Image (cartoon, rainbow, N blue to C red):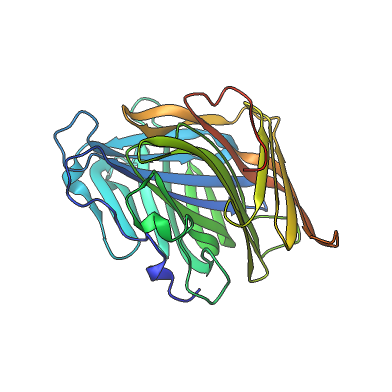
Length: 348
């Protein structure tokens, strides 16, 4: 993918202010052959230091939706570039099975994700190292990637900010998950990020780039109640990368609607002058809870699974079917303080 390092919002956003601030990064790989996924979540809160919630963390939603968490309280050991995707946070630790010194933490860029973390109570751990070959950013392939939230995202009016850094790519490497080593070659990879004061009041997320018989298909769909100048506004978005072409459905160019259950079923539709898309996500798995940034620091206000069933249908406005795709390795998420209530929106 051309100009990947210049994807909008790739760089670290903190400007040195002592105001409430977080930034978070999400890397995921999907292993179709064994039916597993690994989601790596990195975050830094109040990086100026000395505040109640100052510090960093790494979270992993791993094999069978198992959860692993590690804090990095010293903000001075966190590093990130302001003009490209590059970040790291490390502590000195030990490998539990070998009792040898190792740098606990992570390092992540546009083409690399590696690290090691260990739960001090359970002694469960994860080591990982994989390289990334970017394919699609946010927009048509072989064109400069676009800002996921449009040009207004460059102004400090939305909270939080959101950017899909890589909708689809290939990952090669390995993950050692509690003594079980997964090795892989050119499996689907994904990267996104958020930044601001806290996650939305309420949101949902549907994501997949491992569809059956469609190796270059990637879907990201989401809805949320975000803050704009102190007011709350419902927004939604669908982005589909299919064989190099980008299909985008937003409030500016489409009519969107959704029906989201507290857990178990996600439905989203959109229609514009050219296309109609319908997405259905389901799961009978319990998933797991992950921590997300709030005004009160990282809290368990998010429920996730990477074992979701997703069906996707794209048609021309005339009714001609362009795409019918399915996956059993989709990401499905609900979050916010009121995620446990059903959420229906029509024609926003």
